[in-house]
Image (cartoon, rainbow, N blue to C red):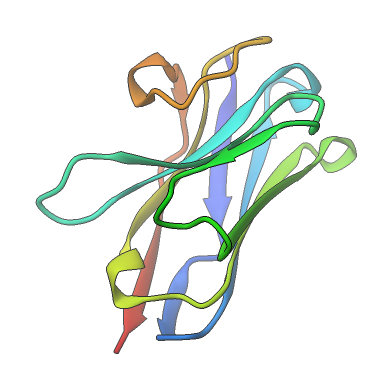
Length: 124
């Protein structure tokens, strides 16, 4: 079982930046791809970014390409999401998740373990 805890959310003005962190316990993350997802009120949860267990591959939703960067520090068992040039439409609860050992996917339905989420609010 993997326990995931997100942090770093908050209120920021449009054009600002935030860095989200996701720290794991119960397992080391070195064998797990890690993804970030978000869910805005009244909308379905959507893919944001994913990084492979080795850190050598990343994928992003088109809506965040060039603005968000996913990274990981396996020694700290932590994954990050650096969010720059934030827009009001980025407002959502952000979740980190993993599909399990040595699995890599952008499909939300294939993710097995989820954190509790952290709120990001971008004001205009």
